[in-house]
Length: 118
Image (cartoon, rainbow, N blue to C red):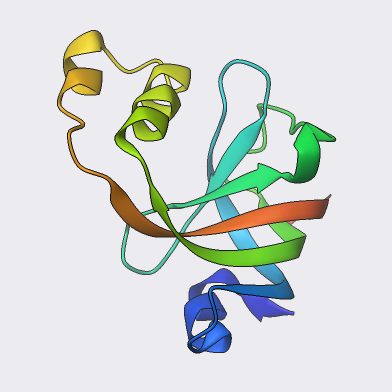
């Protein structure tokens, strides 16, 4: 298992790698817990989704540490998807409209999550 902060280095030049990571939850989807974000050292949180929407997270786990098992990914997120995420996060229409460029980012698709009591 690796800290989320070391995920990109552990991936090397691969676009996807099966691994376990540990990190601190920054945010959870306000609608139904269908995604969460983890704290990363550059200050830009990493999005975590769940394979086939098979499960959801409690919305009160912000600040808790989690262990994730799944696929680490390097990806480019479309403007349409970024705007959808912003709407899910209850951003204003003005904030959503400011999203005009796709974004390269690290992401994680979890097939299992353990919430730690730290």
